Image (cartoon, helix red, strand yellow):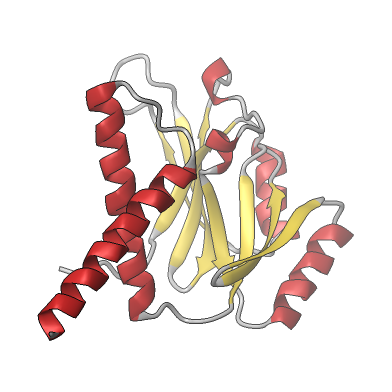
Length: 198
């Protein structure tokens, strides 16, 4: 079985007009669908609108607007990293396109928080009216087989460190522990490969 790209991402909003204006007017995404429904599931579920913008390549970004419902405290956006891990990133093909998007967004009064080159992509980051983090990114190179091998080793090392923490109550708080564990794995792989060759 194979997945074929992202169909949509969805988030709640309590800023209906601002959200529609931002995605339609600032980002220029066509509004393509809206479900207007009575509450689903439990009796106290509020009525809602579930609306979708075309975000390119057959994907959409969607929002739930809960009618007559106040925003719960735990869903108020705060700038800590845990909220910013949840974000949507769109692809552009060239640096000129990336810079043009930056100029477009800034010309509409939206602050671009930063522009970063990180490993295989270069991205700009900004927020929508709800405080959700958004990204427009340009691939710098394609993923190579070595990237997958490195990812497997990195995650295996992190999983081992997490298990060690859970079993021994020793801290696992810094990435250096992952790097050290991964380094040990690479050394063993190299030694085993050399032994097999000889």
